Length: 232
View 1 (cartoon, one colour):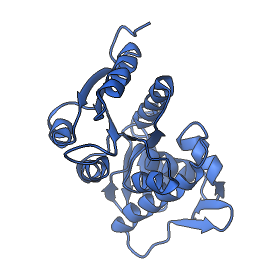
View 2 (cartoon, rainbow, N blue to C red):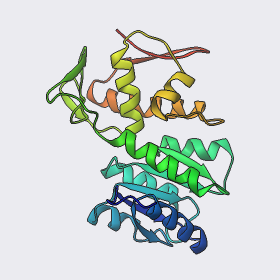
View 3 (cartoon, rainbow, N blue to C red):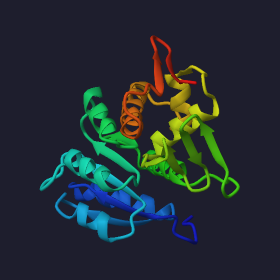
């Protein structure tokens, strides 16, 4: 049954018209509004000029490929991005995640699984129910949970939903050593074969953004063979 009120606007960039139609149909039945492009040429202008809550990008798009589009989208916005492709090699997934993609789904896929991924990613991108003005503070790191604003050394840094989720988990538990699977469950909300390696990509991106605000500082330590911890 379709929800009475739309939950958000999803942009789908997919060159196979049949797949695009199936994805749109399932998302609309789940209560989302959709727009679709069969090439990559107009994706950036759409994201910049029309309200968009999430982008689903096929990698092998005519005009402009999904990798270059994801890179440019991340240069001006942190709206969620899900990559969709027939490529199944781990290196292809990791490239997408290193560019800031929030999730990845390989063809052939279940449309219901894609809807579940969309729902999970959008849920992570929403502000948490927290009292106005409540901050999580750890050293020079400050996280406002109601606005999702993050500052390091009093400089605001823009984080993707996954990066934000990782940082919040660590700030809430400074010094705790998180395994990759722990972080995966906290951020993704589910486990998926091979996804534990993607945590490395998200941590790498998070470190880069934090170091822009305060260079030469080791905020997050890698614990060999285990995972990561936020330094005290």
